[in-house]
Image 1 (cartoon, helix red, strand yellow):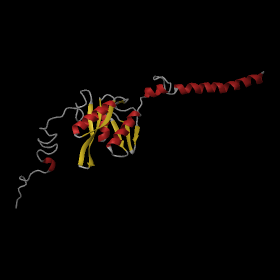
Image 2 (image 1 turned 90 degrees about the vertical axis):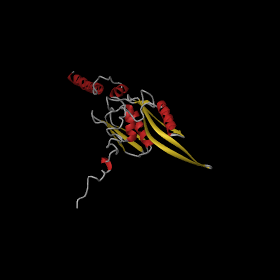
Image 3 (image 1 turned 90 degrees about the horizontal axis):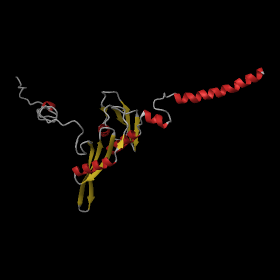
Image 4 (image 1 turned 120 degrees about the vertical axis):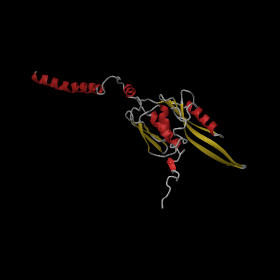
Length: 230
């Protein structure tokens, strides 16, 4: 007895209109293409990129019932080394996001970058959150989770390796990532802070005192030898 297999409808991802598969699904051939940039690009301004990391619904129990409100964690950056974060609260989600964007604009910091990556490895701490950032070669991409990725993409980092080592709370992860970014320093800035020229070799300043100390140690020996001959 033969079974009509062709009449059986396709399953899961092969079904027309499924996620990212058929012509009607998001990401399919017929779906509209989103312009390059972050999710929600344009809400923070033409020259800024905004990411909504987390939206939380807050319920407050009062005498007459329950009051619902929303809090939104938003990251805003210019993609050229400046980034900030803010948490907005409101009765509606759009207003909470708008408040978060305004707060993020006021708390923006400058991050030193080395090309398309970060200058050196660093670990950021905040509460139970720890985030490891490591520079990566060209073509690696942003290897990071949701909260860390949102921060690094807003900064303008294109190649980096990351690992979240502590809590998964998005607020603490974002703050730990910002702590790591604040501890980044370029080589030239470190050289200047130590009183060395940016173009001088690293061992030049240490070699001069060593040579002077060697001459002082040899001087008494030569004096004693002259007195013995006399």
